[in-house]
Every structure is written in structure tokens, then in C-alpha cells.
Length: 109
DNA sequence: AGCGTGACGACCG
DNA sequence: CCGGTCGCCACGC
Image (spheres, rainbow, N blue to C red):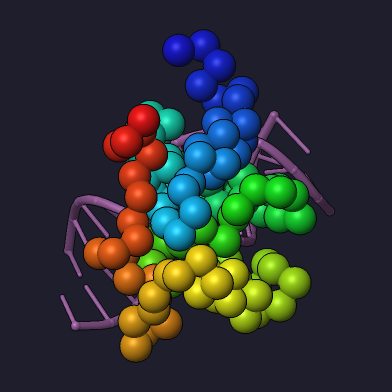
């Protein structure tokens, strides 16, 4: 596929935009959906570029469900509050309960 | 044009 | 179980 890399950011954003309300997904799953499962870091880069946009980047967490990107929001707790506001539950480790809220790109589409 | 870095993840020793 | 390394892609210096 020709523009797999050129549109990488765009593809990431497109996936993020599809994350259902009250659900989350991981960098790894997004990367895998895009065909480069090892490019999870690049997904993180795309989120960095997406910071401050309309994209629900707070619904993207690392593979443990930890809010590794919370510090890139307006405040360290903003991401958490947004998620809780969507009915997402957290574990004692301050991780999203993926067993309840994990959404996998293309899994329902 | 080369090197380092980053909201990650899998593998190896 | 834990630390180091590599792979992936884009960006800054």
C-alpha cells in the first residue's frame, strides 16, 4: 500500500476519532490496525501532534491501560477526569480497566 | 545528511 | 523478574 507511511498520522487520527464514547484503545492496537504493530511509538507521536485538537486522545492509553499521556493535557488529572466522566472505571494501579472498556479498531467496524 | 528523541511494545539475556 | 535493545515512523537540531 503506497501511502501507508505518508498518511500515518492521518490514519491514526481517523482511528482515534472512531473510538466509541466510554471506550479506550491502546497505541499498540492502533498501530496493529494500521499494519505496523511495532509502530506504537509513532502512534504516540501522532497523538502528540493531535494534542489540542478535537480528537478524543484521552481514550488512547498504553497496553496496561495506564494514562501515559496524561501529562500532555491541560493538567495531569484532566485525562483521568474525562475518562471517568465517560463512565470508565480505573483499577488500583490508576489504569483503565481494559477488560471492561477496551475497544479494538476494526473489531466492530 | 546523521543523530537523538518520543504519549509504545515485543523480545532477549 | 528486570534491565537493555530493537523496531517502527516522524520531527528537531
